[in-house]
Length: 312
Image (cartoon, rainbow, N blue to C red; front, side, top):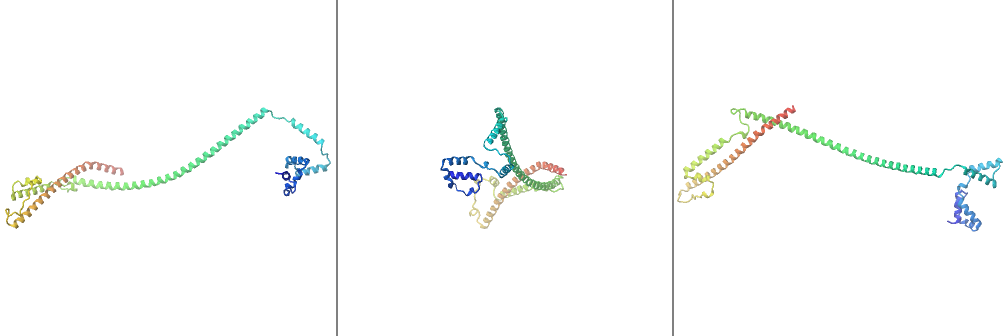
């Protein structure tokens, strides 16, 4: 910055009239002489707004002048200023120990202040975290309540369904008990209720009688020992007989009739044996089922009765 600009800036500081419109370069020539340069540099370096009298101070000075009282100037003013400096020196001052003590106290208070500020910041952070956790817990609590209500509705519906099914089951068991009581009352007049309770012995005896009659008929019509050959069910013991051979029978009608009768007898015998085996197996299965049902019916009946008693 040039000396002229610095001079203009100083004038602006002391609120010199129209200092804003002045150009600093126009005052550079004032600093060309040594005498002016030293004064202007002192002026720019020391004069500030503190050296400017306010309007109140100017008005008070004008009133002082008009009052006629003496105004100190020059040597008299210097003497008074020296007296003021002497009185300032006589004022009590703090010693070094007290000053150090006060400085230590200031440092301690500053540390305490910083510590309290840190604690305050930490508490604010913890409060923020706690508030965030509370919001999250509230959200989770709302979701959990919704799930709980849904689960309760599902459980209530399932409970009602199970109750209805249990009621239906108990009604069915009660009806079954009524049927079982009727079937177990006596051996005479009461009819049997279940097909599994009917005996197949009569049917099997009739099948055996039919088989025996068929066997006897074949013995009479053909030859002795054909029953053992057929019952052996071994294909090697069977031989095909050509009924069309002229040495056996010359009449074609008789031959055809015998051939058809033989085919019918063979088919009937095979079917009868198959049905006999199937019925025997079914009879054994039904007997096993009846035995298992009788063993488990008592436990089912006791459970149903206990359920009735609880509901009553």
